Every structure is written in structure tokens, then in C-alpha cells.
Image (cartoon, rainbow, N blue to C red):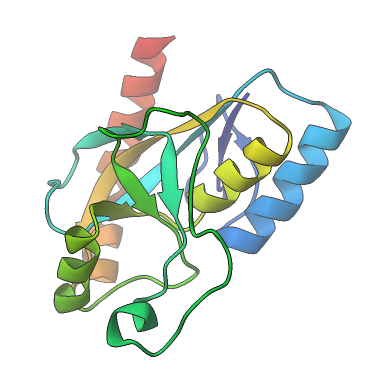
Length: 174
């Protein structure tokens, strides 16, 4: 099953599940209960913490759920905040998920120091639900922006072209 967030990120070949961690988790759980897929592929956009360039396409099987306040020692979590659906993740690109977009490039550097390369709002929830149901899952992301003060402006500017390129990439893999 191919899924996406929806609204501005819709694909003719993907089922919309909702934007952000919560809507994705609720709707994907419901889908898995009612119509359990053999595997899950999430497709969407991502922001780069600096290593990947605009319009790069990245595949991953590992996600984290770390908030910016962690890097200022202003928070902690008792949850396991890195998750994967596969055992060998040593070479994987880690995708961070939060309901907030990073706009401070200095904090973006902190993510890179933890080997976290990209951010996408939904991917942690996708992998968390997939793990709960023991369903293989992965994601394909296209970079629309860097995580800096211009993140939203660049996302808007690059979004249409990114959607075309990601669609072409996925259709080429079918």
C-alpha cells in the first residue's frame, strides 16, 4: 500500500492518511485494522538539515521523533524515539518527525550531529504503526527546502516541481 499525507501532497497512486504525527497514526491504524496491507510505502516531501540538496530523492526505513528543545537541554522523553522496520539500519538516512518545522539552521546542525538528515512530519508515525502491526514499511522523500529561516518560503516555491519529480520517480519504480 502506498500512502501520503494528503492535502497539498496528494498522488493518484497513494492513499491519503493525514498531515502530522497524530492524524497519520490514527488513520493508518484504522486502515491496518480494516484492510491490512502486506507492506507500506510512504511518499512525501522533506526538509534537509543541510546534507541533502533541493530535489534530492531519499529512501529510508528509519525515523526519529526528536523535538528542537532536546538540543537546548530543555526536554527529555521516556519513549524510544528512534524506530526502524528493518534490523540493519547502519547506512540508512534518519528522518526526524515533529509537528513543527525547524527554521533555525543552528538547530539543524544539531540534528546532523546525531546523524539525522531530514525532517518530515509523518514518517515516525508511519513506522510506529507499521511496527505495531509487524508490517514492512519504508519511505521515499523529495527535498523541498532546507531547515532554515526560509523553510516555508522555499517549500512553497519548490513544492509543485518536487511533486512532479517524486511522481515520476515512483512511477519509474513500479
